[in-house]
Image 1 (cartoon, rainbow, N blue to C red):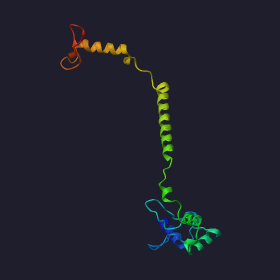
Image 2: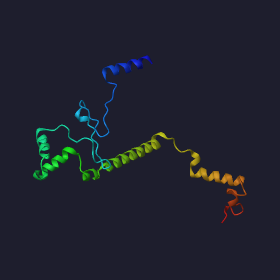
Image 3: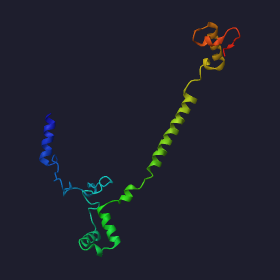
Image 4: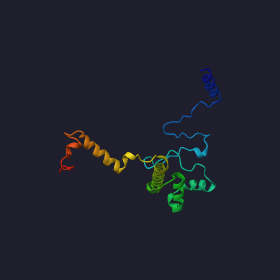
Length: 171
């Protein structure tokens, strides 16, 4: 208990225990936030991210952003695409494009099924014991004959279907 209180006091004095806050319309990006850890999030269900995709702009990109403030009729098609790529990572067509991830998933599924089948085969050949002699066809026939000789369950069972006079199954 005492160590928990001491730790919380140490964090408060260093400023590590406080969280950054932001207004509802503002982004959560603070001035000390590292650039690779932006809160960029764009998907089909949420197409307008809070932050642009590129936050660290080169000199050419900054010049393009200044040119953006003017008339868009003066911008070429390539400059408009470059501006779009500064703001968004993918277009809707790129987001909706099917991936080939299913091939990898199915390959892994088939690999593990094959590995499992190989392990089962190995166990049947090298690990599991031989079949008992009672499961051979000769022994099964002897067991059936013994059941019939004992007339086990003659009302509704196996013996009720055997004709003892003709020594064959009833038709």
